[in-house]
Length: 382
Ligand SMILES: C[S@@+](CC[C@H](N)C(=O)[O-])C[C@H]1O[C@@H](n2cnc3c(N)ncnc32)[C@H](O)[C@@H]1O
Image (cartoon, rainbow, N blue to C red; front, side):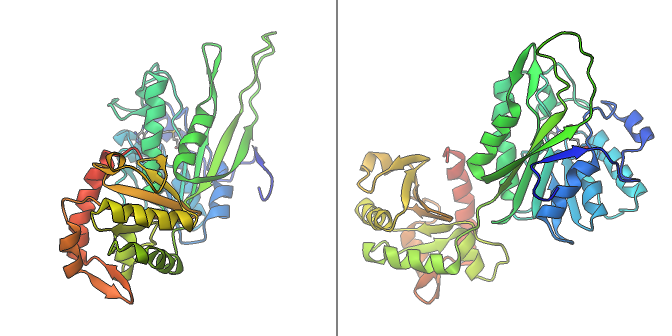
């Protein structure tokens, strides 16, 4: 594929196609199953050997087959348990005994944060609820969603999970097509792009083209609809240690007495995960918070409260009950949490550890905070 923006899928690689008997046993007769060949170039471009490729809509395991073929590790989740079992059988036949597709939901992946290097998937298309899933449908089956609003709402939850399982700098490729229904184009590929852009830096689109003849019946709107988009993005690289030190120095005059929590605190405590933001528990004094915001504003940060841009002179009414404000400059995200019932700031400082001037929460404190913050985030649209 190299630098071409399109990939014309023609040649098949021997042994990678879905065996016919497995297709015959599938509840949808494998109509929505892709080609390993469409996955191979993305795996080659975006991962190195031994890295992990994850497919949250794994279907009959095509992405995992392609990843294993290229010497990558692979994780897959598929809602239909019957499909997951067929996919695992397919992998076994190819000798990939350590791989399996797990039954599960793409909006609640059974994997740790930062478990993968690339999330690569072919999304289930909107079928208006007319089609059934490959197994008994349940509320999580995307094919069974009857309204496009419900389908679109599901996108955000899927993208959030894809984001969670990647480290900063990790890559994402979602393959999707716009579809026509009742003579109208439903722009689901573009909506997937918008959903991805909420979380990821959307970098490129590639167009996959297939040969699919169509009868010329004089209908000027008919095409063979034989292309789909591969929407490619990247999780922004997180703040480096130098960024942390700079933020610390920038905020010092505000007297907020910050305690570092979240992913950077875990990193300073020896954790292996790559931090994606700078989380600070600060004094619950709104005047000092505003001073801190003014300093960040001067340093070029954009300020937000629950996704809404704010200025540094933000009123008490805007801040109260919203727990934290966010400052963003390029790849550096700083969250200032000024309300935290689970671990009040005054209680956090005494038990905290130090490295140079940076004060960071100890593991037990972080565990308490992580739980509390998960609850707070559930109420926040950001
Ligand atoms: C386009 S197919 C994927 C096909 C796969 N790329 C392959 O070639 O085998 C989309 C898959 O998503 C699954 N799916 C739908 N809703 C899901 C959900 N909420 N979580 C996980 N999988 C889901 C469907 O059952 C279907 O197998």
